Image (cartoon, rainbow, N blue to C red):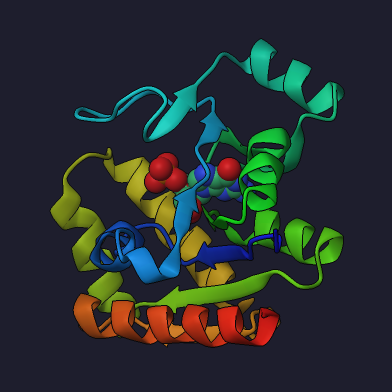
Length: 190
Ligand code: 5GP
Protein backbone atom coordinates (compact mmCIF):
# COMPACT_ATOMS: atom_id res chain seq x y z
CA UNK A 1 0.00 0.00 0.00
CA UNK A 2 1.16 3.52 -0.81
CA UNK A 3 2.13 5.55 2.27
CA UNK A 4 -0.21 8.49 2.92
CA UNK A 5 0.76 12.14 2.61
CA UNK A 6 1.85 14.23 5.57
CA UNK A 7 -0.04 17.54 5.44
CA UNK A 8 0.86 20.37 7.81
CA UNK A 9 -1.48 23.32 8.23
CA UNK A 10 -0.38 26.36 10.23
CA UNK A 11 -1.70 29.84 10.73
CA UNK A 12 -1.94 32.36 13.54
CA UNK A 13 -4.13 31.66 16.53
CA UNK A 14 -7.67 32.85 15.73
CA UNK A 15 -7.31 32.73 11.94
CA UNK A 16 -10.05 30.13 11.72
CA UNK A 17 -8.02 27.01 10.92
CA UNK A 18 -10.59 24.81 12.64
CA UNK A 19 -13.48 26.30 10.66
CA UNK A 20 -11.65 25.88 7.36
CA UNK A 21 -10.55 22.31 8.12
CA UNK A 22 -14.05 21.33 9.21
CA UNK A 23 -15.29 22.17 5.71
CA UNK A 24 -13.31 19.39 4.04
CA UNK A 25 -12.24 16.98 6.75
CA UNK A 26 -14.93 14.42 5.93
CA UNK A 27 -14.48 14.50 2.16
CA UNK A 28 -13.99 10.76 1.42
CA UNK A 29 -11.83 11.52 -1.63
CA UNK A 30 -9.22 13.13 0.60
CA UNK A 31 -8.89 10.06 2.84
CA UNK A 32 -7.77 12.20 5.78
CA UNK A 33 -6.90 11.36 9.35
CA UNK A 34 -6.26 13.97 12.01
CA UNK A 35 -3.32 13.76 14.32
CA UNK A 36 -4.30 14.52 17.92
CA UNK A 37 -1.60 16.55 19.68
CA UNK A 38 -0.41 16.43 23.23
CA UNK A 39 -0.55 19.70 25.14
CA UNK A 40 0.12 21.11 28.59
CA UNK A 41 -2.50 23.84 28.02
CA UNK A 42 -5.63 23.81 30.19
CA UNK A 43 -8.70 22.41 28.49
CA UNK A 44 -11.14 25.00 27.11
CA UNK A 45 -14.84 24.58 27.62
CA UNK A 46 -16.23 22.12 25.10
CA UNK A 47 -12.88 20.50 24.30
CA UNK A 48 -12.74 16.73 24.54
CA UNK A 49 -9.78 14.69 25.79
CA UNK A 50 -8.41 12.50 22.98
CA UNK A 51 -10.39 14.36 20.33
CA UNK A 52 -9.13 17.94 20.49
CA UNK A 53 -5.96 17.17 22.41
CA UNK A 54 -4.41 14.81 24.90
CA UNK A 55 -4.18 17.14 27.91
CA UNK A 56 -1.10 16.17 29.92
CA UNK A 57 1.04 17.50 32.75
CA UNK A 58 4.37 19.20 32.11
CA UNK A 59 6.14 16.11 33.51
CA UNK A 60 4.32 13.74 31.16
CA UNK A 61 5.15 16.01 28.23
CA UNK A 62 8.82 16.14 29.17
CA UNK A 63 8.91 12.35 29.44
CA UNK A 64 7.43 12.02 25.92
CA UNK A 65 10.11 14.40 24.59
CA UNK A 66 12.92 12.56 26.40
CA UNK A 67 11.72 9.21 25.04
CA UNK A 68 11.63 10.51 21.46
CA UNK A 69 7.89 9.96 21.19
CA UNK A 70 7.16 13.25 19.41
CA UNK A 71 7.60 14.02 15.71
CA UNK A 72 7.88 17.69 16.67
CA UNK A 73 7.05 19.93 19.60
CA UNK A 74 7.07 23.60 20.49
CA UNK A 75 6.29 26.04 23.24
CA UNK A 76 3.44 28.38 22.37
CA UNK A 77 2.44 31.23 24.70
CA UNK A 78 3.61 29.42 27.83
CA UNK A 79 2.39 25.92 27.00
CA UNK A 80 3.87 22.93 25.19
CA UNK A 81 2.30 21.23 22.19
CA UNK A 82 3.59 18.17 20.33
CA UNK A 83 2.70 15.56 17.71
CA UNK A 84 2.84 11.87 18.73
CA UNK A 85 5.10 10.19 16.16
CA UNK A 86 3.90 6.58 16.32
CA UNK A 87 0.26 7.48 15.70
CA UNK A 88 1.13 9.57 12.64
CA UNK A 89 3.35 6.84 11.21
CA UNK A 90 0.77 4.12 11.78
CA UNK A 91 -1.91 6.08 9.94
CA UNK A 92 0.39 6.92 7.04
CA UNK A 93 1.40 3.27 6.72
CA UNK A 94 -2.31 2.45 6.49
CA UNK A 95 -2.47 4.80 3.50
CA UNK A 96 -4.21 7.68 5.29
CA UNK A 97 -3.26 11.27 4.47
CA UNK A 98 -2.41 12.63 7.89
CA UNK A 99 -3.18 16.25 8.69
CA UNK A 100 -1.33 18.13 11.43
CA UNK A 101 -2.67 21.49 12.57
CA UNK A 102 0.38 22.95 14.29
CA UNK A 103 2.21 26.22 14.81
CA UNK A 104 5.18 27.50 12.82
CA UNK A 105 8.17 26.21 14.82
CA UNK A 106 6.73 22.70 14.80
CA UNK A 107 6.09 22.89 11.07
CA UNK A 108 9.72 23.83 10.46
CA UNK A 109 10.84 20.74 12.42
CA UNK A 110 8.51 18.53 10.37
CA UNK A 111 9.70 20.06 7.07
CA UNK A 112 13.29 19.31 8.06
CA UNK A 113 12.55 15.70 9.02
CA UNK A 114 10.10 15.05 6.17
CA UNK A 115 10.95 17.27 3.18
CA UNK A 116 7.99 15.78 1.27
CA UNK A 117 5.50 17.17 3.80
CA UNK A 118 2.85 19.34 2.19
CA UNK A 119 3.00 22.59 4.17
CA UNK A 120 0.14 25.10 4.01
CA UNK A 121 -0.12 28.44 5.84
CA UNK A 122 -3.53 30.04 6.38
CA UNK A 123 -3.42 33.85 6.63
CA UNK A 124 -6.08 36.25 7.87
CA UNK A 125 -7.28 38.92 5.40
CA UNK A 126 -5.65 41.51 7.72
CA UNK A 127 -4.20 41.75 11.24
CA UNK A 128 -7.19 43.87 12.32
CA UNK A 129 -9.52 41.08 11.27
CA UNK A 130 -7.37 38.57 13.16
CA UNK A 131 -7.66 40.61 16.36
CA UNK A 132 -11.41 40.84 15.88
CA UNK A 133 -11.64 37.05 15.51
CA UNK A 134 -9.49 36.33 18.58
CA UNK A 135 -11.54 38.72 20.71
CA UNK A 136 -14.77 37.30 19.29
CA UNK A 137 -13.82 33.86 20.56
CA UNK A 138 -13.98 35.31 24.07
CA UNK A 139 -12.04 32.47 25.67
CA UNK A 140 -8.79 34.24 26.61
CA UNK A 141 -7.72 36.92 29.08
CA UNK A 142 -6.43 40.25 27.69
CA UNK A 143 -2.81 39.38 28.46
CA UNK A 144 -3.08 36.12 26.51
CA UNK A 145 -4.81 37.90 23.62
CA UNK A 146 -1.89 40.35 23.42
CA UNK A 147 0.63 37.50 23.53
CA UNK A 148 -1.23 35.61 20.79
CA UNK A 149 -1.38 38.75 18.61
CA UNK A 150 2.32 39.47 18.91
CA UNK A 151 3.05 35.79 18.25
CA UNK A 152 0.84 36.04 15.14
CA UNK A 153 2.96 38.91 13.77
CA UNK A 154 6.11 36.79 14.18
CA UNK A 155 4.41 33.77 12.61
CA UNK A 156 3.35 35.81 9.58
CA UNK A 157 7.04 36.46 8.88
CA UNK A 158 7.50 32.73 8.24
CA UNK A 159 5.00 32.32 5.42
CA UNK A 160 7.79 32.22 2.84
CA UNK A 161 8.87 28.85 4.31
CA UNK A 162 5.57 27.18 3.36
CA UNK A 163 4.77 25.45 0.07
CA UNK A 164 1.33 27.12 -0.09
CA UNK A 165 -0.26 30.21 1.47
CA UNK A 166 -4.07 30.42 1.53
CA UNK A 167 -6.04 33.45 2.75
CA UNK A 168 -9.04 32.76 4.95
CA UNK A 169 -11.35 35.52 3.86
CA UNK A 170 -14.14 33.05 3.16
CA UNK A 171 -13.71 29.70 4.99
CA UNK A 172 -15.52 27.73 2.29
CA UNK A 173 -13.34 29.11 -0.46
CA UNK A 174 -10.16 28.57 1.59
CA UNK A 175 -11.30 24.97 2.23
CA UNK A 176 -11.93 24.37 -1.50
CA UNK A 177 -8.45 25.67 -2.35
CA UNK A 178 -6.80 23.44 0.26
CA UNK A 179 -8.76 20.38 -0.92
CA UNK A 180 -7.61 21.04 -4.48
CA UNK A 181 -4.00 21.30 -3.32
CA UNK A 182 -4.28 17.99 -1.46
CA UNK A 183 -5.96 16.23 -4.41
CA UNK A 184 -3.23 17.47 -6.74
CA UNK A 185 -0.53 16.06 -4.44
CA UNK A 186 -2.39 12.76 -4.12
CA UNK A 187 -2.35 12.42 -7.92
CA UNK A 188 1.36 13.24 -8.05
CA UNK A 189 2.11 10.63 -5.37
CA UNK A 190 0.39 7.86 -7.35
P1 5GP B 1 -4.55 26.41 20.84
O1 5GP B 1 -4.06 26.65 22.23
O2 5GP B 1 -5.24 27.61 20.27
O3 5GP B 1 -5.38 25.14 20.70
O4 5GP B 1 -3.27 26.15 19.94
C1 5GP B 1 -2.23 27.08 19.94
C2 5GP B 1 -1.32 26.81 18.75
O5 5GP B 1 -0.68 25.55 18.93
C3 5GP B 1 -2.07 26.74 17.41
O6 5GP B 1 -1.35 27.50 16.47
C4 5GP B 1 -2.04 25.27 17.08
O7 5GP B 1 -2.03 25.05 15.67
C5 5GP B 1 -0.72 24.85 17.70
N1 5GP B 1 -0.59 23.41 17.94
C6 5GP B 1 -1.56 22.52 18.24
N2 5GP B 1 -1.05 21.30 18.36
C7 5GP B 1 0.28 21.40 18.11
C8 5GP B 1 1.36 20.46 18.04
O8 5GP B 1 1.22 19.25 18.23
N3 5GP B 1 2.58 20.96 17.75
C9 5GP B 1 2.81 22.27 17.52
N4 5GP B 1 4.05 22.63 17.21
N5 5GP B 1 1.82 23.18 17.55
C10 5GP B 1 0.57 22.75 17.84
